Length: 218
Image (tube, rainbow, N blue to C red; front, side, top):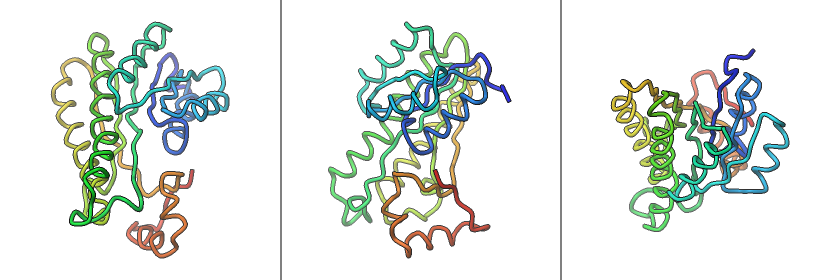
């Protein structure tokens, strides 16, 4: 299928996991894909796996200068994105905790990456799309909607903030032809959640909350 033929997409957190799976699928659908990630070596490896349809966009989403530079470099290379997937994030296992036990530094780091980083990604995506329209897709989480992330205060709160941010931006720019949507993946086993993957009890508890017992592995 070539549903994205002629389109260019920037995906953050695309060197591994869900982000890489999105980038690879977009490329199979005919898109050119910018692999956005702060790990330069992993980004280069992801580009090599996808091939000529991919280009590296090394950036730190928590740093506005880095985000702005990535969009400027894409524009200069003729790769201005029609689609942006704001996917990058962190979940600080072993540090995130119920609120009474949560260190401020862990809260701040999670907010800096997950919420501020998503804000910066969307901000510069909108700036790139104001005259042409486009699509912005944000990776949400069930923890931002339900109470299943009760042991992960910072992560759950930032994901809830992402859902609110998405609705606000969608309403503000709908008349400019910019679509903004949140996608909420079910439990997906990636390198981000190895702490859960390696804990049979925690893994079983999460899978047990999925009605059909299904999950994804990347």
